[in-house]
Length: 225
Image (cartoon, rainbow, N blue to C red; front, side):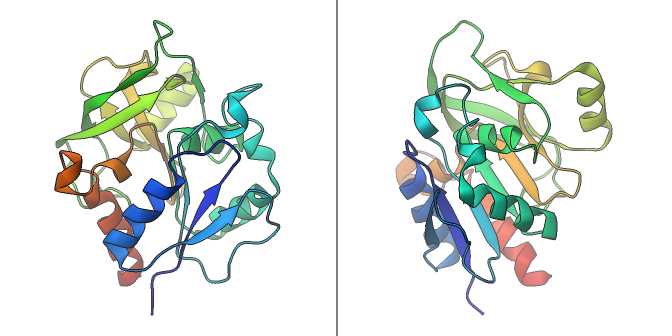
């Protein structure tokens, strides 16, 4: 059976095509392209991606308006049913605003836009997204964000650490994120939000392929299920 995925586009998304190309290149099947104002998701989805960009111009708070788009009601229901959902950069912000993930993404420390390749440490190599890596492995993935400073209260951070829900951590200080957190999982492990862009690191022409294993692991996990 063909891999059925969807990429959600919001007004201001600018990495939706990158995400769609990455999914098609790894899975061999082009994803459905879904507009934020749609009321329904395609049937039988195996995977949903919320891409990077500046949804609604990042007015109010980054991701806050997108989290209230009509399609997000269906994304939330799909996530609650166990459908894997990946949110990258602005997609991560949307997931926190939709309360699918804890915490919030604030303005970077130093108030600067950061656009470069960073080193990440894989903290959890057992999720459906990260099983293609080794625990403690260092990978290199591009970042491009102005509001990637992950914040949560100490109790939430301790819970995330204790439950193994920190997926990735910056290997060196990047944007002021609490405990250098770069990506987190929900309690069920089927929702991942991360600020770095794995879809920009799947082909040697990108300068590195460390992001490819994330998509391969998700597809393999679904095939094995």
